[in-house]
Length: 158
Image 1 (cartoon, rainbow, N blue to C red):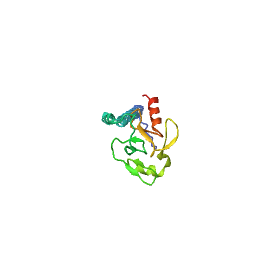
Image 2: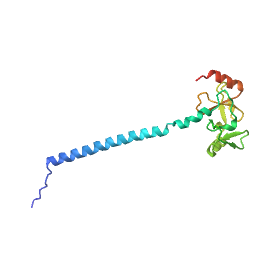
Image 3: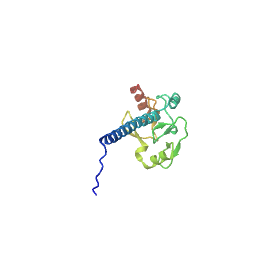
Image 4: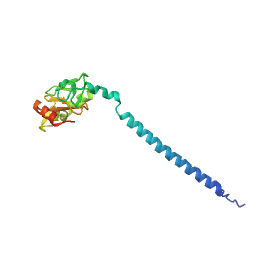
């Protein structure tokens, strides 16, 4: 007996192809949509909320020198009253906000120095004159003298 293979009907093949195309198109649109939603959510979550900025009113003016104990010298951030840890065994008094910052200051000499924006000299953060950056971002600037600090304030008018 000869067995003949039964060929599927042409209309069945076309329906199957259309179904596959429709499925692929739907998956593509769903993937693109999900990606866009994820991007929007990530952007929304990374944007600081208005509550995060209310503390900026408590920041000192840029012309006011800041005590070094109010600065994390690893991240160069004004800590606005938060208690800092003294970093031991560095030949000067350095402050850090966390154990990670303490480790960074102890292990990396570059973390303990800054460049004076006026004189362009490398200075120790432990002996520097410190003020809040005029853009009020929460970052600080280090100066080798009070005169350099005042000159910087005159130059930088945001």
